[in-house]
Length: 405
Length: 142
Image (cartoon, rainbow over all chains, first blue to last red; front, top):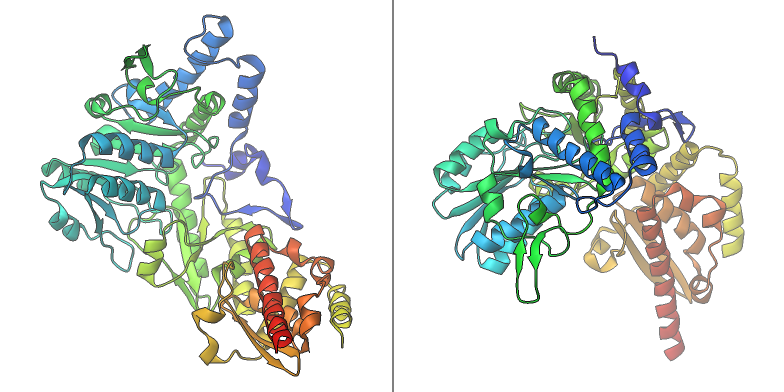
């Protein structure tokens, strides 16, 4: 039996007052809070084994390297990667996407070829592709969406051709909550010989990802949205692609041999991990992986989907409210606008009541333009949120909407 | 009333509220009471740059005194515009240009706003004073 109170006890930050009210944290799509295991793992790393990884022969260096590589292995298992070498540590989703754009793009994208993204993408899955398309004289195409916030797959299918080099789409929309049909998107792209990168930043906290079942070429996500530390993220790639790609940054660790005439590069994943990595956060990420696995993705998704349904229904009758993002398949994101009310005003008034939500364009300005709005208020739920919190949120939102209209 | 007298009056009014929420509600009320903004001035020319929400300010000068119309798409910001106009609108150009707006810190306005919105507030004040300064310079030239 799922015990949300037991889960909450593992998150020290939740137990505090904001502006004299108990904190209600509904900004999980921006970053989730961290359970005690993760905080302790950070402390444990620095108090018992801090050393630089990989080249040291002393005991601490060995321990640190083992812990660092243990996370790589845990992540590989979590996403069912065929081998741990296919899991590259980065600073986060944004860096993972930039890495692929800069290396795969630079090496393989040709003039006149096409990259397909979607209308709901986060800026970090738009701008790196724009940059490489400009550099290479390639064309960026955009899969349109409908008013519910779902991709128009038939349009996507028409867009695909032998000129398509790469398709980059998000698994779950940060602004709308839409869950995209990744397996189908990948299948169609592969028929045309295109590779697919999936931005899994908003999916990894909620669902068990199987990169082999999805047959994705690249899958990227961040630790900090899935109960782990900030500043560490993952790039998964198919082996032959990662091996064919040139390095991203030059420096230590990514080399095999350096002379002033020539450098030979290290094998994957190290080829892409120049410089001292973010060791402590990588080590602590393992505790986050264990947290989601012990809690169980099914349990997490089931609880969050109950919260989403309850919240959607509870705020639906507020005067002038309009939910933005009504896809059939949705993760725990509730985005909305209230007619005649500025989203930021709602955010500030809710904050006065201890409720943390996000307001604005959610780094998806083209998407906001499509809906003809400047931004939304977004409440996003995690495994530690409760129905009681939603009751308070709905009650306060009702008051706020009334006051502002 | 002088700029100083009006500021002191506002400080007294805000002294009645002890929670952030009560202050917000009062500011919202003020925003709703702000006289309507003339639609013909709702153009790019009168938008204050540096605000996250849209803010329009239109100045007018009569007998060396400057008058402002103001508006915003945010009700809270509209309330803040209303406070600023109450202090500065109808005052002598030179008084506005050199005004020390101490009431903002005394009523805790900056603490009520997020950092982004605080920057917007600074932009608004700068714009109001710039208008006064520009008209003052123009009058001196005459």
